[in-house]
Length: 172
Image (cartoon, rainbow, N blue to C red; front, side):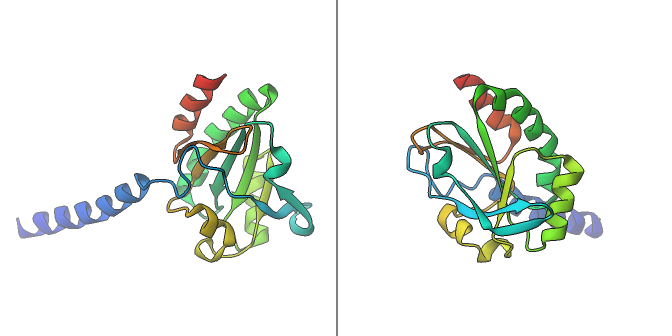
């Protein structure tokens, strides 16, 4: 009986912190201007420091920003649903931008290829908590999805593709 209570206690303590992270609020509240993203672009199997992709260059359109990493199980689990959203909403003018927290270009590239992710990918190639983009967006869980409106303001934040889908359906 003592073992059962110990296992139950461990299970509860393991689940609660993860749930608290998922419910953590976004660092940039809805309605505020989204911080600029200006990062090197994944190109031909490497992050090209000479090719910088910016969020500002996408102004005038809705932009889904996907914060993720190849080593993140939840990110890989959400990727197929996000690809379906891309297929549905990119033809309607919604841009997608992947911001990877990978610090290994080969693993980053391999994951993009494995899932055949079609949208632009950028990265600082640094550990998540050491990146400047994390400081700007204060990401506490990945994947994290932001929807930026045509004026450059945050229209949505969530951690599940299903939540993002609901928001996109309400707009289009």
